[in-house]
Image 1 (cartoon, rainbow, N blue to C red):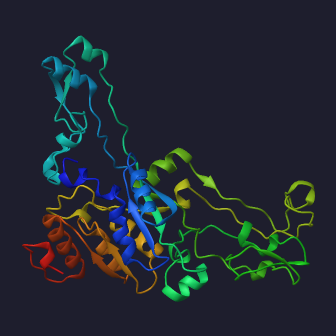
Image 2: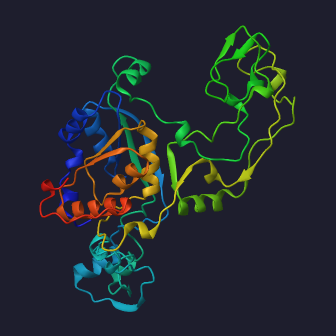
Length: 381
């Protein structure tokens, strides 16, 4: 991105994450964004610092721009051939939009160029249309956790962290979620019972006790949060490809398993509850982080501003009530805005004074409080 801090590799160093590790309670979660080419280096550094890698969330978006080298242009440049302008580039993004040098980012590719030019040399004509990179459309979010002390139950009772807020981050839906693990009607027979809280918290079968009936079922508050997150454009593109999908439906008592037996055991299956199907695109199974151009704000030159809706979802996923969120790479402050909007405490660190002042301004604007500029980031809190 033509930024000196972007090439230092500080996120690849275990020492960086060891400092984060030191500040966290046992069981606390770490979420780290990375690039598709280098996130494995970040994951290795996080793991080497002592964290457990728990998962990797895939954030899909539809607004990425290819940072590709135009090979034909590069050949013409190398042989000193002058290219003829054939028209303006409809995909050009002027740097005035956010103060970013797009010509530098896109390395002479058509996305950043002002004009479309024709190959001038025979060699360039041969390689016209060839580049070096794909369009970025997803970003990995590494999910790590500081090791527990004892069991999960012991750790959350002692330190207040260690779990994921499943119910608080369920994906809203109008579908009837009364199949599979959520249905008392799937327990094999009256000699078995479904354990756990009613509403699908558990589908463990134990001997003894009555089978839950259809009337015992309570609709969960939404779909289980997945390790795939879409933005609005990505969700729209997915729905266009998938078309309208219908969820499963059946009438009460209908049974479709082979031989009338449960496929995992010899138990006879009890009557199945009625499920009314619903319809929609494939994106209904995933959370959509809607972005807003107004979020960036005037004068925000940071190249990787994250959607506030996405950050609110992520901090809510791993932060207990009243918890403190640390962002060691604060950037333009989107995490801080999200944390305070969710009612948590926030502590941010940023080495670039320009972005430090920008983050403070955006955070205080979200709180509608006055703020002054700082001459030294270390002097402002």
